[in-house]
Each structure stands twice: as structure tokens, then as C-alpha cells.
Image (cartoon, helix red, strand yellow):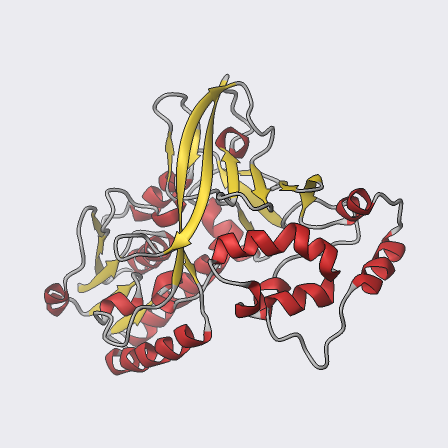
Amino acid sequence: MKKILIVGAGLTGCVVARELAEYGGYSIDVIELRPHIGGNCHTERCPDTGIMQHIHGPHIFHTNNKEAWEYVNKFAEFIPFINRVMATTSAGIFSMPINLLTINQYFRRKMSPSEAKDFLASQCIKFEGEPNNFEEQALATIGPDLYENFFKSYTVKQWGCQPDALSAEIFKRIPIRYTYDDNYFTDAYQGIPKFGYTEMMGRMLDHTNIKVAVNTPFDHSIVKGYYSIVYTGSIDKYFDYQYGRLGYRTVYFKKRIAEGNYLGNGVMNFCEDSLHTRIHEHKWFSPWERHESTVVFTEFSKETSVIDTPYYPKRLANDLAILQLYNDLAKTLYPRMRFAGRLGTYRYVSMHEVVDSSIALARSLRRNL
């Protein structure tokens, strides 16, 4: 059997490993630096309350791709879940994403959808040509009032730079609705696995052709024994940062346990000049369970140091130039070495995109190995 090494037991590594294992003809070793599988989707029960915690921040699986939805449902029972996000601003608490209720409440009006759309258009700033950055895109889409109160301070906290340094594409991904729909996502399929993501990925790795080793760092010396390697760690780390480090933001959390309810909701964004960006109350990510106590995570964002786990690729102009140099190096190792996942490709990807791309990668490996 051809030996395959998969570096990283996050969602990418788990899906690729399972797909190759079921195809047959491959012996797959999965190594993971952390003491658990699941990557940033890792979930575990709080030992004090029994509440299922999303250790690295809440994850809601959402997709319009029926194949991706059916795929994850092979390994877990998904319970439908609607993600309703609230936002604390200097003017009060409002629902996110910005929708018709947000607009009417914020401006203290009673506008219809068409009236609200025309009203916001009258507030917007017009630029010559296309907006060049996040701030310009926001000002051209929702105007200065909503931008200043809902996005400016939050964006500085989240990304550690001024909004005019970020791509306009980031704001384009933020939904603005002229209906009363406060579901953060609009996909046909939305849910959370009943017993958490880590159990789901454990089932993916439960195959006779797969061996898993946690607490196991990657070392270049081990690659000689493998026919092919799928690397889901940071691409700049693999090449020992010879062209410099790619920019990431990381997050960290302060946990507290309390009685009753704290937020009354799963996620609260803090758009004011506070130090934290969000608070998560984890019992609301398992509303089918009942708990008297509650677990609250306060989330902070900061620049990624050498000892931090990278979360969000910044993808500023200098980062993309460095990335191109690493991608050129990666091409010299292709097809034996494949870089995959959020860190391996240096791009932000949702879980359903990970499933889609990982299945495609496994099929590509089967064709070419």
C-alpha cells in the first residue's frame, strides 16, 4: 500500500484521510501537533457544567451544497441551527447582520424595504471608480453613520490595522439586508453536530487504513518514507520562513462560568472601543440541551506572535507578495507535496468550502498517485 502522510488533523486532514482510506490502496498516517484532533473546530464538554464548548470560537456548518451537507451527515447527526448575532454599539443593542429591523431601530424610523434602501443610498458616499478598500466600500454601501457605529472600531480591534488598509472584498462579504431576516447565514443547510465537531472528525478518522498520532510535530526528516504528503500547516512555516512570515491575526479567550443566562444569545459583537471583540455563550450552540449554569468566552484579537496559533490570514499587499514566493517554491515539490486548508493556502475558508476542496484534493491524489 502507498503510504500517505497528512500533517494536521483539522477538518481538511480528516476529510482527505477518510476519502483516501475508503478508496483503498493507501496507508494513511495523520499527525497532529495539538493534543486533540479537530483543529480550530475542536469541541469538548466543560468539566464543570457539561456544556459543549467550541474551544476556538463558535462554528456553524452552513452550505448550499447538498453533497457537502450529506457528506458531514454521514459522520454526525446535525441539528438545525440558526445563528443570530447581536451587536452592542454606543446607540444600543441591535441585530446583525444589518437588516431592516436594525436600520429602522437605529434611525428610529418605520421604513419599508424600498424606503430603507433609498434612505441608505442617500447616506452613502460616492467615489470615483470602484471603492479601493474596506472603509471606502463600507461608506459606499451603508454610509458613514452605520459604518462608524457598527464596523470601524470593531474592524480595528479584529484586524489590528485601520480599515483603509484592508481589501474592499472583506466588506463585500458582509451581508446587508432590506428584510427582517436576522439569520446570519442564508444557506439552505445550516446546523451543528449534536455531539460536537471533534466526535464527527473522530468518526472520519476511524478507519483501518488510518493511523493518528496527536502531540506529534512535523519534521522534514520523516517525509522520505512517504509516497505523498498533504500539509495543512502554515506554508511559510514549512519553508522555515525564508521569505518572511505571513501576517495573521490570532484570537484568545477568557472563560467564566456563571449561573443562569449571561447574554441570552450565542454571540454578541462589541462595536464600541472595548478591548474585546465578541462574547460567546456556549449553551446557546446546543439549544437542544438544558443546563442551569452557563459558560462564557470573552474573545480578544491580537497580532500573531511566534508562539501563537494563527487564525485569520490578513492578506495585505505585502503578505500576498510573500505568498507568491512560497507558492512558487511549492510548485517545485508538486505533485508529491500538496498544501491544503486555511494555513496551507493562506486564505480564509468556511467549513463547507473545506469539505468541498478536501474531497476534490483526495480525488486529485487518487488520479495522480
